[in-house]
Image (cartoon, rainbow, N blue to C red; front, side, top):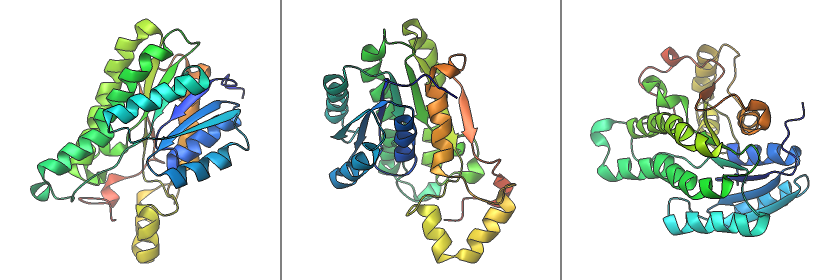
Length: 265
């Protein structure tokens, strides 16, 4: 299917690995110009070299989007290098602190809200003015099924931040429709990426991992970054022009009863 993305400029944050890199790769395959960002310069440049094999062009910007000045610099660099932004994918996320609520600190909550919610709001606020007037502009925010399934949340602060992001995305969709900018959320379930928590758990406790996968997933496996990326790219495309303000789970029907209390890693 031709998604109608060829020649468009896609900005993907957290694009040096995992879902972010897979998403950038999918945009590259559609003929997009890319602006990618991450905090680690070496990892980002290595990913940019991979993407340059298929993308129309690639601009790599080292930036920490939780820092307002760096987020602004990223958007300005995208406009300077590519002439504007058609698609914004807010992929940066993560959790700080322990899983038990009584042990979580104010700083755990502050940092988790900043990295999952506040930086996303900041990136949308900065990007929307330069996206307005483009043809079929779209924003996709990466949340998590943790946002509505406490049994699967890695921590209370992480689940709360993702729930807020899902809620806030719909409000942004309503506000930005005057500029004809669509805003949607994709919520991955458990995704296996080399080096991530699931991969470490699989290597450290293979029996526990196999049990969780067998009982927690009808398909008998975890998802892949590429499967999430495909949904993100479709939602960002003109083919999805009648999907707005929605949250799309990409979780293989993961079952919360398989992880009483918390995920196993």
